[in-house]
Image (cartoon, rainbow, N blue to C red; front, side, top):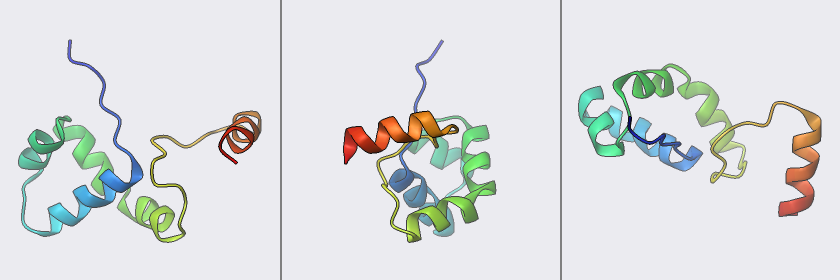
Length: 79
């Protein structure tokens, strides 16, 4: 079984830019070492990722925090 690869917001935005340059999803998956399904899901949610990127949220974040307790801990740790 292969290891899990989580892309940061910045990497996801780069992937979207490369998809506009006529790279296929298969080539993008090979370049970023992720599955074709992950590439499809990133491109499907590109408006959400671009909105986060343009609002200057931290681009090194790999996942969104779902509850307030985790957000408080994250804010206090990285503030």
